[in-house]
Length: 197
Image 1 (cartoon, rainbow, N blue to C red):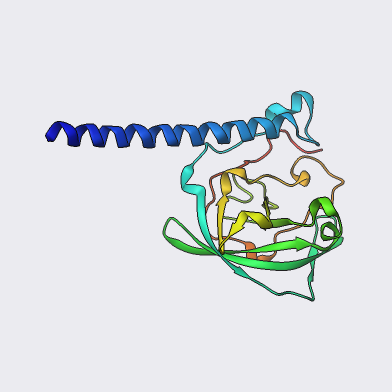
Image 2: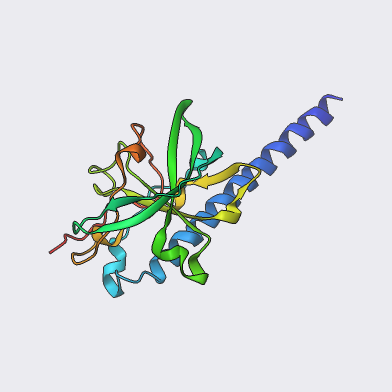
């Protein structure tokens, strides 16, 4: 009986360890693909792209609440230009047992394009912004189909920098104040290592 219990516990441990390793591998592949296909950072400069270690604690189950925004609003960008967005909904979740929320937006321009009509956008800032991550905030992309039964599996390990983190000349949406988290999201892309000129 004791042997059976030990075997069961060991089997569970190995299974969880394997699952965790598999997840870490999947994030490593995601990051490598991101680096290899980056549209702005190219060639030898790609070595300056940096990420926090994969952390499964930041793969978060969030509760989704739908909005019915018919008016939209103007989101400010780094260049001062405005881009029109609608609030698609809000998600509620916890980070280190602290309740958080983020709004999910839908771009008016992208809604008009068949390829991107189901694309949703989560720009956010957090306690790492301006320190170990880009000061202008980071982004997460999801699709409408990622939300199932009002639940979203959100992975901060896939958070990435706007193009403005690497060079000048882009109009990058600035996360609205309602999407600034007070907690540190130590997952996803870190500061770009090469100085911007």
